Length: 178
Ligand code: FES
Image (cartoon, rainbow, N blue to C red; front, side):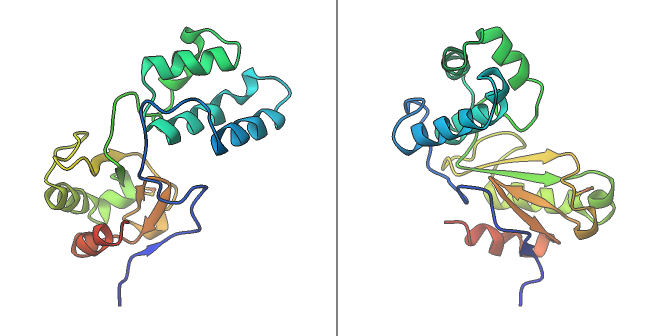
């Protein structure tokens, strides 16, 4: 029986690994989601963070052209969008693999062996921190506290949390990714 486990139901959508850096912002179902987001806020400007998340979900990362398009959609300047996007570490300002593996190496996880978990992810994916693996599937990075300190080591893969991850169960965890 495995001892690591996904933490909770993932946010919408779960484990999405297909992205298109050239996809329109926003078309089809994403247009509907964009409109729904706007409907939740009193001004377009107030919707900037969720719209950036949606753009990243569609395209995988926030290229300068993507931020410019978001600015047009929300009646902001590209500089205003860049200022916000570059403040938050959850926005990718350079391309990442289909699966972004974020290993918490903050104090609680570090004391419980997060460094070895990180090493195992890197060796299993054959990549370096922050790089994209040769097959395009993985980018592995260290991250700050994921808020699951009682379940070290905590790992976030795309939108899904995994708790109590050890180096030994990294191969099985990767094998379960679609
Ligand atoms: S220190 Fe790792 S989740 Fe908090």
